[in-house]
Amino acid sequence: MTGFRFLTAGESHGPALTVIVEGVPGGLPLGEAQIARDLARRQGGYGRGRRQQIERDFARITGGVRHGTTIGSPIALWIENADHQNANWRVRMSVDPVAEEMERITLLRPGHADLPGTQKYGYADVRPILERSSARETAARVAAGAVARALVGAVGITIHSHTVSIGHVEAEPPAGAIDWEAVEASPVRVADPQAEPRMVAAIDAAKDALDSLGGIFEVRASGVPIGLGSHVQWDRRLDAQIAQAFVSINAVKGVEIGDAFANARRRGSQAQDAILPVSQWPRGERWARGSNHAGGLEGGMSNGQEIVVRGALKPLSTIPSRMPSADLLTGEAAPSFYERSDACVVPAAGVIGEAMLALVLARAVLEKFGGDHIDELRRNCAAYQATVGPREPRP
Image (cartoon, rainbow, N blue to C red; front, side, top):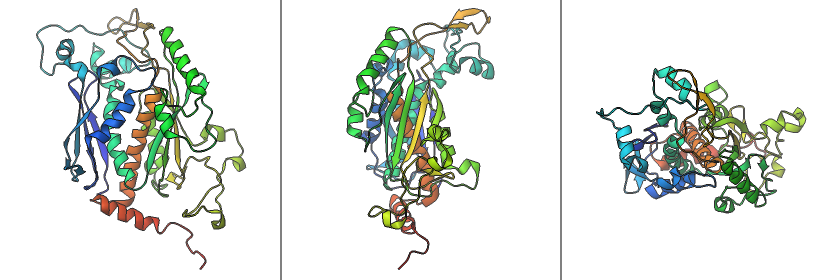
């Protein structure tokens, strides 16, 4: 078994979000509590709006798991939308035809899928577009990502994230290892305690101005085996898959792997990660580098170092302050539609980024090592890892 994929279905105010994760080997310990932890992390973070107070996301496992372990069949997850219990939403999002005429949304929101979506699908109402294009769908991805996190964790891969900047406030990266427990305790999920109050103040100022803030989050994966991905075709390159996954996150408009943008200003001699001789390898390591400007990826493959990816999140386009726009039906000037939104989602976006990186790495791990049972996957990975090192080492 090497195929791994996931599909999501459901609308923002529909009955639920549905997730199918296919390709997970049997024997992997998995429970609803594991998934719930990541869903709760996605809903947290300073600057989140009222929707997060309504929902208490919980993914029911309805297939693919028996007695606490996966059984090799597709895993089915069901995340109920608590907001749908409101009588108005049950009518607005009814699967069956309704007798009463529904009010149409025709005020277009710039920065959303409203205009291109209505033109593409031929709708005279924005509701069918905004319901599926909503960032609510990322709850389903985080649930799928929790499954992927358990899978890659079985071969020693761990994934974390932290906030790099919010608006103009930038965190000072720690000199040594990041204290991930401190990050999780921070309301803005930042590793720099000095930046935290300034980020909170910036979010408050944007909220008071009926506006929003974007920023940059960073995701790191450690323990990644060397050689995931491939250089032989464009779509098999691991960095390309990661970039696509990150840009697929709502409001993410830029991706950086390693020191990509800083490297663009350096000379080639300053941007390389020197390969160290065996005498300088840390105990237990096979190959070592003097730096990690490449972010753990070279030639479309993992190089054994920590994978470092950053996502640039634009300020959310849905803001209480109505923006100049036009009416879908007439094209005449009209203020944009507003339902509700968050002032800042950068801390939560890091959790979504973790999920997307886990999903990409899960597919790469299964492609490289295969296995229908998790023990077989581990054996295959261990056997491969034993071959990593100099091709003809000295006796």
